[in-house]
Image (cartoon, rainbow, N blue to C red; front, side):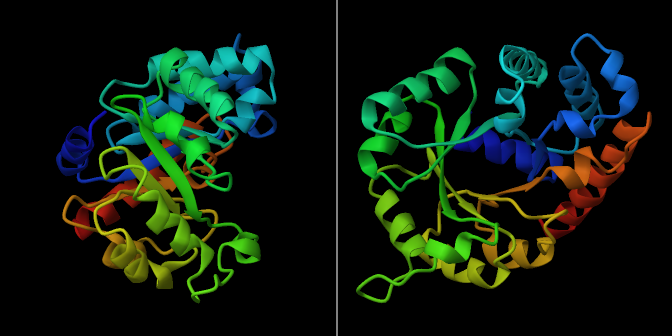
Length: 267
């Protein structure tokens, strides 16, 4: 999906919501466990309930890989079910030497058909470049993450006083362009968004941490939006596990609708 197509979907739906399909088997509603493929059935109902309210879906690969071959099959069926109008993100956080990254890129882009994959930048340009070589695909580079441990390295000062996450963002802009490179910036750092927009004014930001992690959507939108909106705000547990019973999909829709309405007001 191109940047223009993604922006058009955001404007059309008045939404920059990404639904995280973190299908934790241990939290699936009990009545789904009798299905042939409980994870796919869960995802299918979540997609049916939310597709008109969001522009992207982001399966976290850990919840599928942990199930072995059956999990990969659930992931494949989920991707086939997601409408073509939606941006799909493999939340895989890969990052390895070049020839290995090239195979990861082939797996997620060539075989599974994702639009984007999250990539860890720690090993540098040759570990990221193979993902950027796929036409029409996106790298979403970890920059300033929403977890508590982001304090351990990402804020570490370089010799020039620049924090590490800023160096990552500035350096990565020499590798990719606003049409194929996004950055992960957690909503749990709302005070940083104005500064981050000054560092990367044109690039899209994937923003986790809204919902279960307590991020502030209004602050993120106020300080993080650009002329193309430039945001994909992700909510996973706050939507997909909003309910636990047979009406879980309806509960997910209510949660997604609340976020979408807030986004529409902000646009």
